[in-house]
Length: 328
Image 1: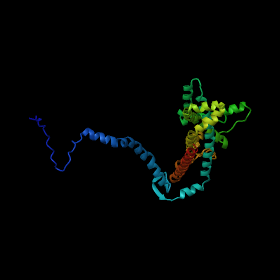
Image 2: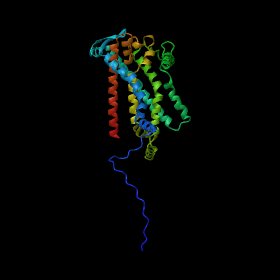
Image 3: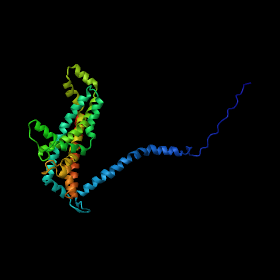
Image 4: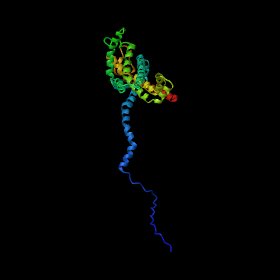
């Protein structure tokens, strides 16, 4: 006889009804988690776009609309269509070209010495200098000083009768200079305020970029017999080209928007930029058109002209960066 194995129990087959078994309904926590993953990033960045729309986009659009209308500051609710009349009038206005020329001259006088001095200070701090942290903090002190305080102090320094600068010039045998009423003297005085305030900030930017340069480049240059000066010119400066380009663009934009320094330096009639508008910038010209002659439409046209100039600068910055990438 042969032994028979016990029968194994069989699992009854699931009835085929044509539908797949469904998962249990998701809990409330799981749904909240999915919503958080999907919509959380948008909620975090929403305040920025909200404030950007309220305080930047809407004023920009309103300024563009107002530049095409005749609007007086005394009656801003009454607007008369003017088209491009304000822009055409602006191009024929010699005060606008004077303000543009002053802006460019002061921009060059302040940007070039500022960035060269910042590069030299950054190179000095990059070396092994004692109390380096103290000197880095000291460089930021002018940047932390308010525009009003710095300009008022410099106005005293450049005083015609009792200013410290004229006292030093007299000690050296030179005559006193009427800094506020002269053309080039006023431009130099305003430029010196900008240089004093922003040199340390740019120096720290250059210092951060210098610390990112690989040490192997300096070691290779030293093995090839390059001096410290040649290392700075052929290793440090080429490595800083993107940072230098960035500071040039930012300083140019800041010079185009220059307002507080010349306004306070000019005293009571600061919006004119001097008795003969000798240091009136585009910012002061805009301020004068809108808040002293009450032509809000013309002031908006000046603002949009400045905005278009900034777009040109930004476009040139983008093209320069592409060229640098191709060269690299």
